[in-house]
Structures are given as C-alpha cells and as structure tokens.
Amino acid sequence: MKMLLLAAAALAALAAPASAQTSDAVSGKLVLYTSQPNADAQATVDAFKAKHPDVEVEWFRDGTTKVMAKLAAEFEAGQPQPDVLLIADTVTMEGLKQDDRLLALPNVDVSAYDPAIMDDDGTYFSTKLITTGIVYNTGAEMKPTSWKDLLKPEAKDKIAMPSPLTSGAATIHMIALTGHPDLGWDYYEGLADQGANPQGGNGGVYKAVAGGEKLYGFVVDFLPIRGKADGAPVEFVFPEEGVSAVTEPVAVLKTAQNPAAAEAFVVFLLSEDGQALAASQGYLPADPAVAAPEGFPACDAIKLMEFDPAEALKNDTGYKMRFEETFGG
Image 1 (cartoon, rainbow, N blue to C red):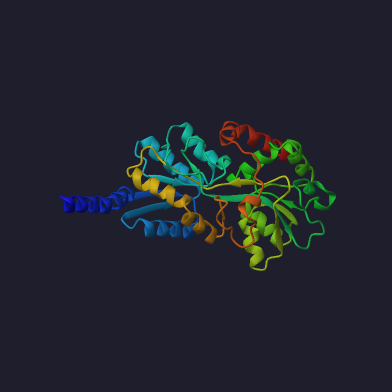
Image 2 (image 1 turned 135 degrees about the vertical axis):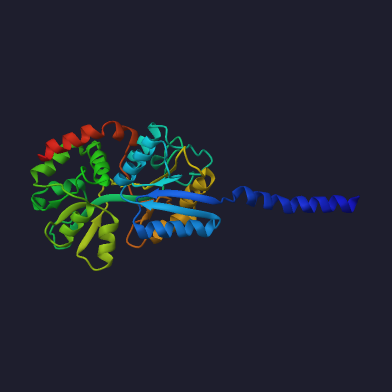
C-alpha cells in the first residue's frame, strides 16, 4: 500500500507540470493585421512561432489607415478576419474599444509597465515607445534643448514639421504639445509665425534636416538616431518639457477565431523576449527593465508628456481644424 501511495504521488508530481504545459500550449491558425514594416513584422512572427511552433500565423501588413479601412469593410460585411491587431497608435485602438470590438484580457501581466501607457480595462497594450522630439542639423549654430528654442530668431524659416493630416504620430504630438500648460496652441501659432510649413510625414522631415534644406524639425526618434549612427549630420533631442509617443499597441478582437493564440501573441510581445526583440529592431522597448538600443537613453530617463487617448479621439476633428486654421491650410 505504501508503495502504491508513493507511486501515485510521483505520478501526480509528473502530471502537474505536464498539465501546466498543456494549459499554456496554443495551436491552430492565428490571423494578424499589423502596420509594422515588413521586415519587423516577419521577425515578430518568426520569434512568436519559435515560442509557439504549433501556431500557424497568417499576416497582413499595411499602414494603420489602410489596415483600418480593410477592417472596417470586413466589419460592415460581418466577416472580420484578424484575431489580433498590432498597429501604430492608441487613439485608433480607443476607437475600437469604444465600438466594443476589443476583448479584455485581465490576466495579462502589465505590472512592469508605466500604467499611463496601458489601457485601464486591459483591451489594448502598448508594446514600445516611438517618441517625437527635435532633430537638428549639426551645422546649426543653436543647439535646442527645449521645444521653445524653436521659437528663437535663429530658427526662423528653418523648421520642418510633419502634418497631423498625414501622420498619426504628428497628430498625437500636436495634441500632447497643445495640451502642455507651458506650450499650448500659442506654441503652434508661434511656429506658424516662424515660417514652419507642416507637410507630409516624418521621413520627409528627416531628409530635409539631414540634407540641410532645414536645420530643425519634429521627428520620430529612430530616424535621426539610426541616421547619426550611419554618419548623417544630425542630432536628436529629448526636450526638457518631455516628448510625445506612439506606442504600437496590440489587441485581440472580440470576434477572434483563435483567442487563446491571440492572447499568447500579446503575452509574447510584453515578455522580456518580446521587448528585447523590439530593442533589437532599433525601437525603445516599453518595459523600462529592458535595455534600450544604442543611441537611446534608458526608458525610465525619458519624460513622456501626458496623453489621454479617449480625449484625443473625442476632439480629433476639432484639433485638426484648428491646426489647419493656424497654418493656413
């Protein structure tokens, strides 16, 4: 009898981890819609599959606007295809949340993260920080440290800016700066007086400053940081007032056909391995415990401006109309 009890105990001990493994295992087809660049999307999928080899990942990639247009048409037809979304910004995710399209994931652990970049209800999760700061050409005499430095005479007619009518990051940046108590819409009116002519996206701004056509600009961090490493005559500044950020959030749709695999994808992106992958791709990881790529300060050394996705979604049209009025669009 004693031997039988010992054998039973041993079997139970062996069964426990096997059971845990089974509960963690996911399989089947996972459909991902993403706005990541193709190479990043492929690397992300490959890294996820290395952790979950029984999952077949099918993915579609385009800019966030086009991804959402495709998804809207699928909603209209009653046939949404993706299980999981990985797109540029929290404002778009907030719209989906308010339309009751996102599945809450209360068991996803976000304790390592700044609560300010996570949805309180656990329907979408920020995976990285792509900040907007100041780029300047190293040939410029003035070396800015504050957003207000771009209102100095030395910057007159030498400022490039992306347009919020084109760039989602520029929209979030505009909302963050105009909501800052020391900047506000007076700051954007000052930029208009400085001869700034916002147009296009971040790539055009970077090229204008790196090429010397302009000396200063608003731009997402990785362009000048990578450019400097490759020898471009640029520097990137995290201004003293703080920076805005898009956070490439991930979410699972309520209509997901494979919610278990979709949640596993979310968990992977927020894991140490997933955050290290983001850093290896040249982005600032959202987890402050994961080392930043070369050229970036540590995540916890960067001051983020306050940003409320729900408020931004509510006032999006009004913000853009005022922007057009300010710059004569």
